[in-house]
Image (cartoon, rainbow, N blue to C red; front, side, top):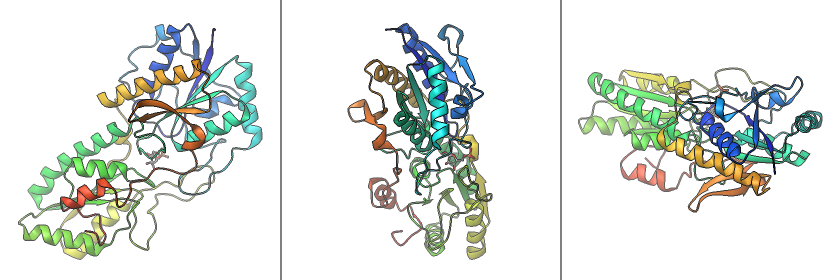
Length: 363
Ligand code: F6P
């Protein structure tokens, strides 16, 4: 049967969004379906509705193009503010307005590509009556029920590249180099990049750190003749008993901006050890640019699977990567909480086995 489907990209942008759009549009076109995109995230579903036709014959170069051609937003009228706190419900009139517009456009399904916030919105739209399927996006890799989200591999590869570069300059100047990476409540980027990039200290939101442990690590390295130290810190990491370092005031319709923990760590280490310390904030470089080869294939599989879920009328589900390949999981299972790095899990154990300090008593 002829279908007309909508696509929306929500939340912070992420490498691979365009690759998913391409896979969805192409797989849909080969079934004879039409596709349209909502512009600017979920806001595009509200009046004045903003859409664009997604005709595969006119789309080119999307597989490797960063960002999202549809635009996106991580604040506004749909804000749910998820993470570790309580999830808010989008106001009923907003959900109903989106549903009405969806129906007026003659759409039969909506592909929601997003992280925990955007998929929470997707779940609420589904409960409102829109036939929704989800695709897991976020550089933070903190979504439940999928082994990996797309964009994560590109982001941590970017962090590893930065660590490689910081190594050579740290070594030349006998400095402590601190790299601040993204990761509000989950330290997947810091942990994976720290292991792959040979960091000496990894600081993540899941493990509160103490400066004494970091200073001990630096002293231990000095004794071994290693006069430089590389520290990677997730933006959401915090000192024992302390708070997350923010870069702006709290706002009603969006998450508080984080930033500054890297600089704070560098300054305190310099004060305590007398060693020259420098901080680099990787910031949006992690989110921009083309997806890696791994992410491209993952996006392609997720996009095709989204279309298959629509064909099978498996609404209210998200494509998830598991040991059995890409499978459907219920959106209800995905939302309400995030997946964090287990403090006693394999990754941290491997790090500790190599002498990496996580800034606590464990090393
Ligand atoms: O969700 C991804 C993320 O990169 C977080 O790690 C970070 O806190 C946030 O986005 C920053 O987003 P923005 O500055 O665009 O609001």
